[in-house]
Length: 176
Length: 295
Length: 103
Image (cartoon, rainbow over all chains, first blue to last red; front, side, top):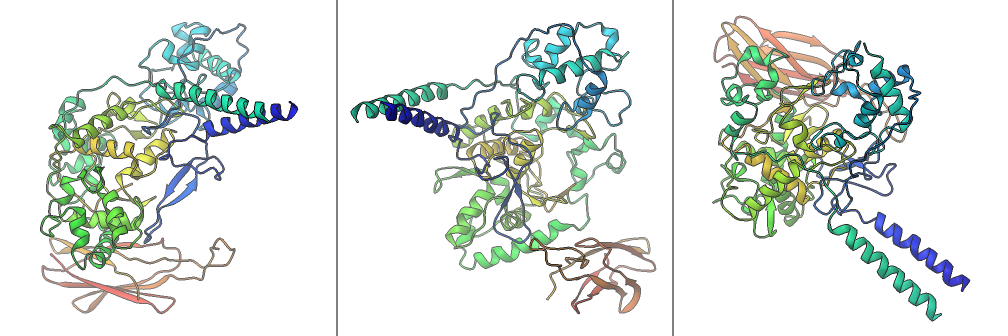
């Protein structure tokens, strides 16, 4: 009986790995690469295309492949528990960090050159008098307000954790 | 011994049913579908920048030199004949010519690519097209890989030699407008429709579709770069770029995907071919111009 | 034998703008390959330009130039039909040249 339980447990592990390795065959991935994801590398005067490991694992999110069965995380409504406890200085660092928020790509922030112009203006953000809860939800998952929003759902997609979003809210609410 | 086996079978079947159900309809989000005209002049309805770049030989020098205005030329000022510079694309052209002539000694290679009576003239302007021998729609680079393999030469889609041959073949169509028919029903139209849907499919770590930026945000800044129109983009590929030496259109898609933090696909994948058909259809009526460069 | 080079000359008035692209690895001799071995220096040391057989440019160049060097220069007192020839020599004794007619 004990053996059978072990076998069932093993089979569970096996079938799970079978599910997770069920990538579509046309993804540029390699299980042996550091982060699974590969990027193409053109070699001059060669008939072969080389692939190098990419700096980030992108297989956790859906791709454009027709065979990709990975679902997009659905919009999520979140409640913010006061007090905010955010650090505005850390928030600014996150807003400018490439691997974190990188808000500057779309939004203009004070004191930083070459801002994007796609996003809404967040200069003098405090004057709008938005509630902390609304700003938190907008960063966590803006699709809750507008299904057509192009702002990435930072919380739902796991790009920023809750404390990091709290820091960002604190930073935005400090812009007057 | 019987019980565990039964349990195992039960467990596996339960797993597969569970997977199959989840597999059927993964949740996806789509941008609002635009109404596209499969011709380059459709840009007049989208961004209106077409009037600045519709004549490739007579672009406005002042606009090309102005950082505020050069996006309105859709980077066409880096295409020949306006750009008379020599660059790495010319080396690729020579390389492509030598490999092509080596492979095409008996004329089989050109015939395999779809040349009429051995002439490459206008061939690039008709691609991507449905290839009966592959039983699906194929881009020029996929056909070069396929036909190269028949002649016993490895020419992987996206590799330098493959793209170099593609540049050489395209150079025979220089100045001829791209002309693929996606309006009458057939495999090409089906591929175009799939590509149009993919263009609006949200994907990746940032939940962005191609259309999230390239329809509504044209002319706006993303940090230091300006978003341009999807119209008229396929005529100069494969293109010489300083970072990539030579980049085919499908490798460009992979780069777009990586920049937007989406898992890239392999060249020749169905999804990229469908996107290539869609993007090429939006270039219908614009002349092929190779070898070109981009930064 | 060195690989092909590209040359183009455009005339405006009596001044010809000559653009020349050389296919060359331009190794400085300071780089190492994956195995840790030093890649031997291999770079162009001299670039010459001749207008109808007369030297108009004599350039001493070194390892500080990038791979596949792109060279642009202007030649005064030219007319359509003049022949311009650019040639280079490197530290390994390799050389190449290309010729074009000014149009």
